[in-house]
Image: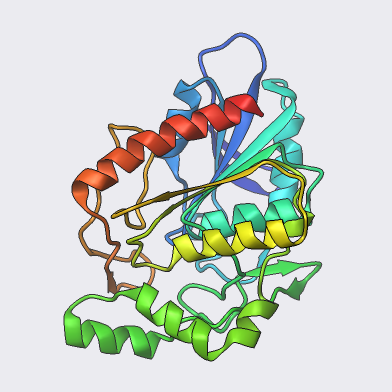
Length: 291
């Protein structure tokens, strides 16, 4: 593992045990921020050059997920392509939750730069910041991207007072229904994506309705006659925390969020969750190997 603090990039680079150049994967974590080192290590063990790229909540970066310039990620992609350890400028994206939203967004805005995308429990729209949902999460050319309607902190606190935990999916669905036009405005233009796309979701996701977002992405690609390879793995009785490999922890219990401090339900049956972890990981590796 090598700490990277150059060209404006804050990341941890994991190199496989290989003498020749290898394909690379950028790992984009979720709303907790920081580095997703365990997943990067797993990819390195599979023979990939793996970059755990932080974009907030790490030294030298913003504390919160807000006003993050998409140019930061473009810089990281191009830097990684120029490393001698990376084969034929092959850079894949792996994003989970808000990182999944980000991975799809990057592929739609910088379509020529990315080899393929895996988005685990992503959204189909650009949401606001964390914990400040009315502030933009992302900017491009110093301009904020649209913000889809999302639960307010007051809504979440009220639910926690009543039930001791928060089912965010219920709140997201209510906001989507009440503000349909604003939701549509914030839809990611997935029709611009030129690389293969794999989406992974769970039908018992209680952080947000990732299965529905996945369906909306697939529908938009169909409606716009996209020619890219795409697949949506949607698992029954599986929640938000879909982690790679059979050795990954099975997380189905509500937990405290590292940024907001609230206790969120994640959903999922333990047995179904364990099977989804293993099955999705095998298919993710097959997908990256294929492209």
